Image (cartoon, rainbow, N blue to C red):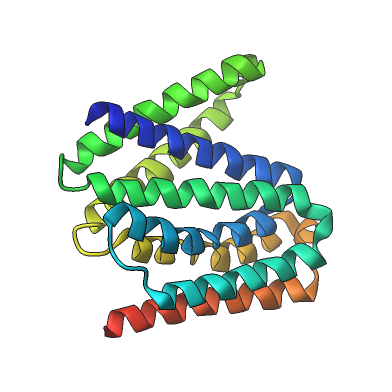
Length: 225
C-alpha cells in the first residue's frame, strides 16, 4: 500500500509541474481552462479503474468540453505550448484523483496524504536534480518561503486531505467536477491581479463559459439521480 501511495504522490507531483509550466509559457487563464478537461479524462479513466459501465452523459459532457477546447486552441494558437502542458496537467490530475478514490477506505486519510506528499517530494527532488534547478530552490527569500509554506499547507495539503475524506460520499468524477469550478474564480482573479496579460479573445470566454456551465449542469443531473 505504501508503495502504491508513493506512486500516486509522484503522479500528483507531475501534475503540479505541468500546471506551473503551463502558466509559465502561457498565462493563468489558459491553464485553468485546460484543467477543466480533467472531467473528460476522468469520464473514461474512472470506469476502467472501478470496472463500471461508462456513463454516456459523461461522454456527452466530454465532447462539449473537447469542442470548447478546440475553439480555445484555434483562437489562442499563440499559447499552444501552454495548452499542451495544461491538457497534460489535466490528464495527470484525473489519473491522480481516480486512483485516490481507488485506495480510499483501505487506510486512513492521514496515511494517504502523508505517503502521497512524500512521493511528490521524492519525484520533485529527482526532477530538480536532473534539471539542474535545485540550486534555485535554496535561494528562495524568507518572504517567499512563508508564502510557499502557506500555499503548501492551507491551500494544498489540507484541501487534499478533505477531498480524500469526501470520497466516502462522492465519486472521483464528481470531485473533479467540483474542482473544475476553479476556472470561474481563477480567471476573474487572474485578470484583477495580472491585468492586461490575462486579456483573451472573446471566443475564449464564451468557450470557457459553455465548458463550465456544462460541468455544473452535469453535476445537477447526477445529484437528481
